[in-house]
Amino acid sequence: MRREQTSSMKCSQTWAKTTGEAMEGGRKQETAMCRLRVGHTWLTQSYLLKNEEQPFCYACDSLYTVRHILIECPDFQDTRRKYFSVTDLYRLFREVNPSRIAGYLKDLGVYGKI
Ligand SMILES: [Zn+2]
Image 1: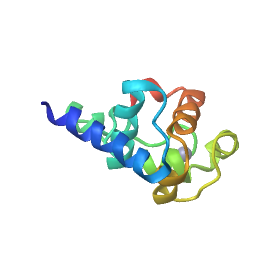
Image 2 (image 1 turned 120 degrees about the vertical axis):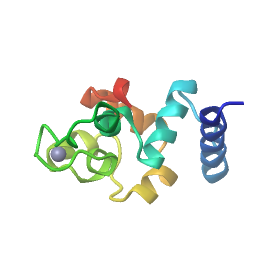
Image 3 (image 1 turned 30 degrees about the vertical axis):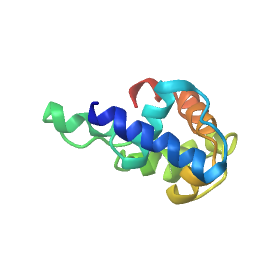
Image 4 (image 1 turned 135 degrees about the vertical axis):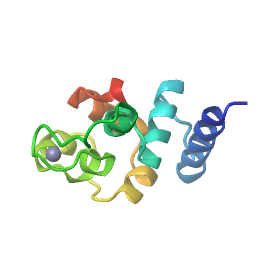
């Protein structure tokens, strides 16, 4: 079994254990949530593989990280409020349904790059 499969299975098990709900949204969403939890997404880390400078947020010019997109960016706040209201990553991954996190990222137009 490949490592990615193992870790994404762990992620869905953790979500199910924490909330008592099965994760909706299928395998792509499980993989996306797993990458977000560890902070390693194509969107925020591909600069390492491409040997480029670390990217800055196109909206507010801060360093472009998973935490920035999910929690911190003031320019995404109105969109974020439509999907969840937690203010830290710990609560986000424990209390917010992954479908809502995915919905937020789709709304921003970045879900396909996670
Ligand atoms: Zn920003």
